[in-house]
Image (tube, rainbow, N blue to C red):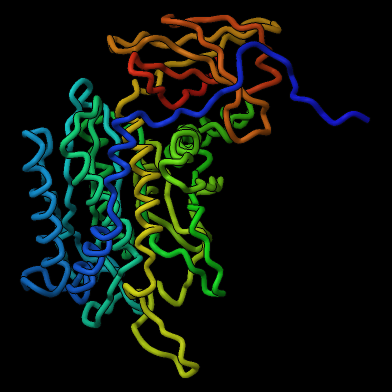
Length: 442
């Protein structure tokens, strides 16, 4: 029997992944492992960054870390000609089991306002709070070098470099607090954005992205995991049933964001493979991307390929067998962290430079047909050159065929909707292409 060929045959051509342009290559080349090391070492120097640690001591505790991060972000913004602003949005978290005393939760956000579509927003984030074995212990040293000094360093380094550039859409470089106790800072940020009607079209969460060596000695400097949630938690049960009824359980907005990241961020400029994993997070774990998913925003999480749990959520100590416990700087691979920064930089810049994801996409199911008619809302963005229909076999993870259809908002393609998954993406005059939208039946 002959090996199975690509089926079904259909229109279009093989989808070639988007490559970084000269400006993006320049941005990525500026990501500096030495600066990432300096950021992480400075964060560790604050002793503990536990959410309930001292907020007024100038040298120890989460308050000192907050103030230093904000001052650094403001120094980056000074080079932006007014395009970047830095805020420290805060609120008082009332007592809960994980935070027994009323506590100020403060995020630091450097916002690089888009030059053409400022209300279309993309977020890259890490959390700056840290912890040891006992989640209530805010006294002992909690270095938090990898969890999550590494993610903070990526947000800060990208903010530094991109401050002197002009994205079409807005990028928020976020550093949030209260993650270890229950995602408090990111929930505050995501709910505020939702309440303010901000069009957040993508969020990248970096949490534990700094180590390339596992507990068994395995070293992997070429892969980063990307956790991609399935059925949106913001959906109603009926919405999820409707999505599952058309085989769309692997085509949520988060999946489309994950596909986009995998397409634009695996290349010679980043030198990392993005390993997409179709679940919200690791077992027994969670992260700040979930706060954005809960508000209906597409979000993914990056985490190193092989974790060493002796270096996470542990008191700093040496066991009887000589094993070192604790989240120490010595266990962070700064070159690897810089490569993860490049993955994020390639993704967030490509998102902000491309047109927005098409909205209102539907597929006509009013009659039986072996053709497929797709319709979407007209976008007033004058920088859109046209649209493309992307498609794939239903059991494949990535879009692999593309049909250019021009500057239209409806098209009929000679391809049966029964046999494949289809989407539509916008193409900018600058060559950048948006994430795909997935159609709902009409």
